[in-house]
Length: 387
Ligand code: TGC
Ligand code: FAD
Image (cartoon, rainbow, N blue to C red; front, side):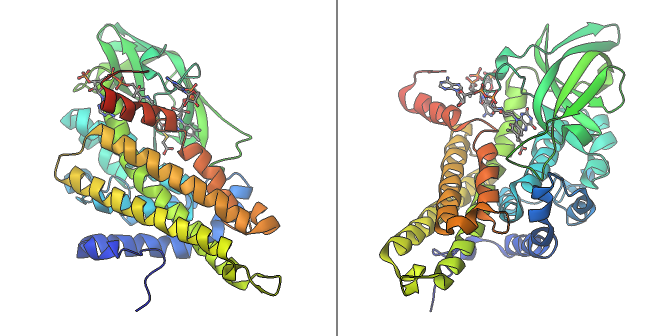
């Protein structure tokens, strides 16, 4: 029996029935609703916001949170599969879901009060409130401990001043989870659109993640009530804990991009006739395609084991770093290689490879650059902090 070229080790057989059902429903959504429009959305630098209600009704926002807060009670592997299937469509849509679920709903759930959970999470799960996560500042995102945004206590309120840069969904967000330095260390605050002194600006001219909105956030002495401070965490471990959740999803998402590129390149190489035979009949093309399948297979097994460790409550942030690094590197290399196999045709968004390759430039950079994750593993191996 022929093997599935996109699942050579039958990783699917290691999934539960529920996990397969989740994967199938998101795959259907991507095939029917995302793929027909995403090339144009990328060309036009347009976030396809018309898909948000459907994403919400499929239960993809806060999928792993408890049902009482609007979540789907799903396990980590299901969340990973959601990311994989969305990113097979476009990294921008997976980004939107990552930010809403892992970077906005997760901190409200994990660090918020019961009142805050009930106030915001159900509406966020329904896609009625869109969130963004402001950690990075213009002077150096890799080193968030050096943040300059400050929150100062003023009676029963806080006054926040500073700015954030490169914030996914920033220009449209109803809520912003903002991390600021306080007398007591870094703390998280929920800012609402329209608060006096809180403004946003879209970042234009991106050549990557063009179907996603990215912005800068500015806080000019914004008065925020203490009821909007996340009370249950202090210090850098607050935002880093959210990053571990999102990086987990990003360990899965690029597998989808890589599969989309391999699928396109395989089809193209079989049909393209050069020097009297299909490109796919040459040894060099076959070696390239085989190597892509090898790297995808390893990434799938790595992501699945990471998911099982997470479900068992045993995952370490360093393991997430290794998977994020490996799987982003795997995908960007494959996307670039596929672009090359397509020749000149590969440079237009009529084909998916260049779009994925360009998107992956952001994916390998955000949520910790490749270097940051390499240094996390280096520190784990040597016991020496090289940051
Ligand atoms: P260190 O000072 O040693 O640790 C501080 C505290 O945090 C704990 N911790 C973690 N907790 C959870 N998850 C992690 N990954 C954690 N890493 C550290 C640590 O145990 C400690 O706790 P405590 O109790 O002792 O206070 O910090 P570090 O030296 O480990 O951090 C250095 C470094 C460089 C690794 C860190 O600053 C870092 O990860 N920098 C990269 C910043 C980054 O990734 N920014 C991403 C911004 S958000 C984004 O890009 C969204 S894009 C989303 C999209 O569109 O999809
Ligand atoms: P820098 O930190 O200035 O890094 C520059 C270079 O230095 C990199 O190559 C880096 O690897 C290297 N470097 C860093 N430290 C070391 C070292 N110790 N040794 C050697 N080299 C080093 N942030 C948010 O908070 N929220 C978001 O929603 C969000 N969305 C994003 C969306 C997009 C499209 C992009 C591109 C970014 C987004 N980011 C977001 C920001 C992202 O997390 C940062 O871009 C990333 O953390 C890197 O920070 P930086 O861009 O300031 O680069």
